[in-house]
Length: 234
Image (cartoon, rainbow, N blue to C red):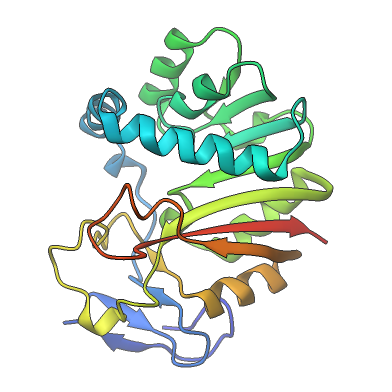
């Protein structure tokens, strides 16, 4: 298998469940994206989660994160918006819309929020934006590089993208246990270190402005288990 970032051969690791690039430190499951994974049960899990205390704590963190960088009144799309909870939390601070591959979860989002527009087809997303949120989405892409290039085209010059994704920097792929809550080879098709995210940014027309682990305290299976990255379009 060839690495999507550096085109070098990847080594099979962790009992044959992931490939690992020794050059750019990207890990890949080698599986294809399957929309059937995101079925009705997936939607039900989303809906159940959004009613929990941790969900609202996470939304508070994400809302403040965006406000730290993006002026109020800016245009923003939540790409992989799920139930639309984050957009509902933003209220009227931004001119927002949402996209998700899961049609049933989009229908739920529409039923809960008539202010924002929601899309199930990426080809129907209108216009370009000043900000994109990509929370718990990057790892699901079959080809993150190509998807990031597409997202680049949805942004205005110097537009911002906010990414949260599982961090394997402290949990090398060869030592990740099966009970790690983010270990899902059929869903999480790629895992990133800081270095592989830098490479991804460079190759897709972005520059990393800041990296931190602000979500990890709420999602505390492992210390610093979620990396939060703010990128700017070059």
